[in-house]
Image 1 (tube, rainbow, N blue to C red):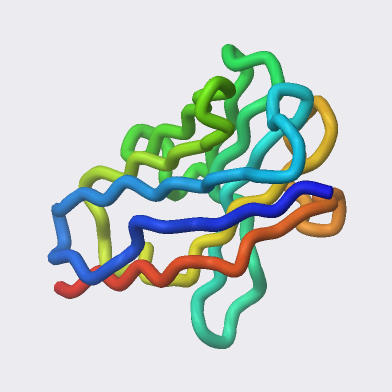
Image 2 (cartoon, helix red, strand yellow):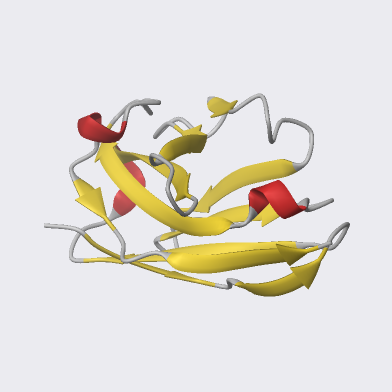
Length: 123
């Protein structure tokens, strides 16, 4: 079992930055691919970014490409999402998720989820 806890969300003005953290416990994440997803009110949960157990393999949703960066520190058992140039449309609850080896863009293919952290971007 892997337990995931997100932190770092908050209220920020458009154009600002936030760094989300996802701390894992229970097992080392070095064998897991990690993903960040988000869910806005009334919308389905969507893929934001993913990183495979091989740290050079990452993927981003088109809407965040060039603004967000996913990274991982296996020694700290933590995954990060650096979010720059935030826009009001980035407002959502952000979730961290884990699955074996390779990331996926599909919600249903992840085995473990955190409880989420709220990000609100004001215009």
